[in-house]
Image (cartoon, rainbow, N blue to C red; front, side, top):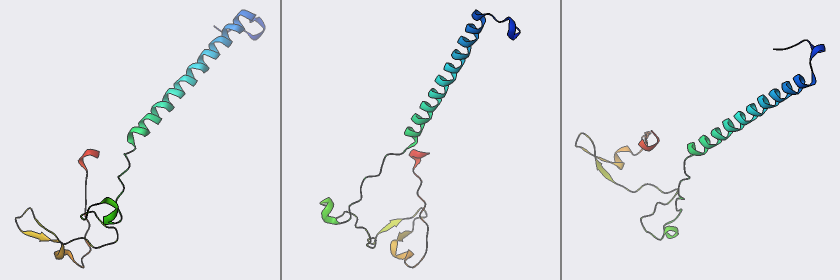
Length: 105
């Protein structure tokens, strides 16, 4: 396939340069496609921004809107064992609330 350097014709040199240019072009196109697919994947992985939380009840127009830097209202909910659990039961304790959104899987 390759000849000695002294015996290469101009046609052979032109053919080798063409092949080299085609290989380089293929590498550039492959790199561009890989970069484009990584960019698209990063855009899909970025979650949507969360809506703004009102800082006062007048900002949202509703009296039930959450207010930042204020204590939570008192509430009670049934537990899985049938007992009623209230927020007051955890006053002064350090608990961790774990929340897992199934949409992010």
